[in-house]
Image 1 (cartoon, rainbow over the protein chains, first blue to last red):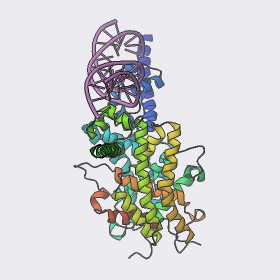
Image 2 (cartoon, rainbow over the protein chains, first blue to last red):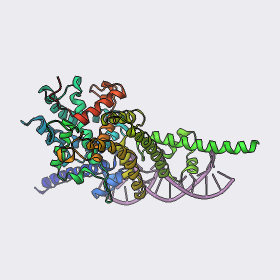
Image 3 (cartoon, rainbow over the protein chains, first blue to last red):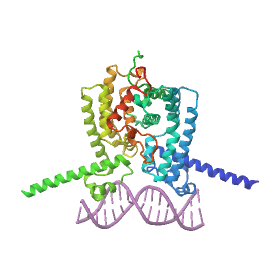
Image 4 (cartoon, chains in turn blue, yellow, red, cyan):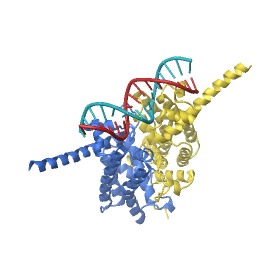
Length: 219
Length: 219
DNA sequence: CCTACCGATCGGTAGG
DNA sequence: CCTACCGATCGGTAGG
């Protein structure tokens, strides 16, 4: 039954093309921002003409929403797997950092800026909720554990609530990623000093948990 | 001598107009980013026509450079005054946070993104140096003091070098500023919890220095 | 500092 | 999935 196969093949091709568009758009949007990436750039990078995009997405904004939805949903699944692991708060935070540094190119700041300034208000709200539920909430739940265990300072003893800790945590990560890289740069960058993702994860988590001040136990 | 006065007046008016343009452009560029702000928007907000801008600046990029140059130079002067004060490392960091939260709307992430992606390579390099010298270096010098005094962990004992500390410090600040604000937002934001700049400054510096983990001295 | 205008590029549509 | 094309807007220029 060649017709049936053909039909399936076409349907699969169409789905594959859609995936190609989303992946390509993700790479471009995350690097340059929503406005700076034209629909023609995306189409060219996919080997399509620009109007072809409008077969899969009603407009540029819908494509952007699809990109963020897939990105955040995937990240959420990974974070929730880590959060449920039977590990200490410290270790789970390290695993989260390693995952986020390793896989996504998330410039969270750029993403939030685009959500707030380039999209329609309804979409803004929806993506903000997605961001909260997919990225902030899983991370906050680890800090929540730390607070319950008495490991972390509560807000009345110089600490912060779990959600604020999660924001702070994310902000420390995104700066690592957005660090400028010049060949002639004589100034230190973490990427050059602490080579592996694992070492960077260790470092970020240690600073957030224990701070920069030398403690009495240190030699 | 009315002619002399008129001449001076014209010169002063021209300078004043230039300043108006720079201040207006600063506000818009820092909020929406380089590409999202059109030269017509800037001109309108100044009560001018768009071509009038080109009497004061050769192109949009030069206006952006002027904005960043004035902004960073002003900030640098303030930071260096704080750095030279006869105060502890902790207190000077607190003063820096308070200054940066209070005066500039710096979304450092947006600024660095624009520098890296929207401008010509030569200008990129120049602004990157300005950023390093004007913002990173003064802050790093305080961390340098902390390292010399043995207050802070050095890189061999779980700490970081002074420049990395300065980047981390800035990244923790910029997230505070770029936090999304929705009226219906049920989730905690630092801005709502810790009202004054002073309290926020205290909090950020304490976390960066002492970490989130409860220490033995805490009750 | 204005009016008038330019070439380029944008997101999106028509029609097949 | 293509060609052809649209109105709008962009940064910048001419000429006064």
